[in-house]
Length: 144
Image (cartoon, rainbow, N blue to C red; front, side):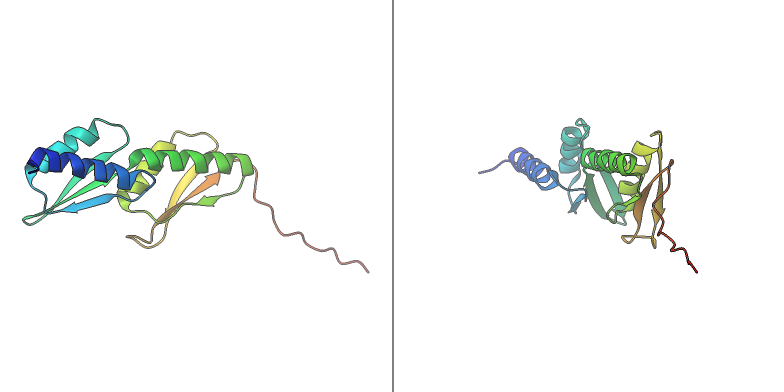
């Protein structure tokens, strides 16, 4: 027979596995406070995750955000922008994920970030270079 502690540890391992290569949060609904506290204690101690709890009446939703993956994605894309001098659009993200990316890149020289799209899941971030310019289409000279 599995104990509650063993089940919680298995759940934590499942969460880590699911978030390994993801930028999307892992979502748990209707979890008891003991499990929430164990998850927070275990995952919040690592810089890879951020555990947030949301209440809607009596219902509790826990979202575990892979902030380490978000920061690595932001770093990789910022490097691409700096190397290529061209803007890059990141995938659609929720509000907290966008906050993590903006916050991570805010002190970065040579780039700026901006969110676009309708509120909700359609919002995304564009990373722009602050130097140079994007190539423009060449205009043909008319010779007579």
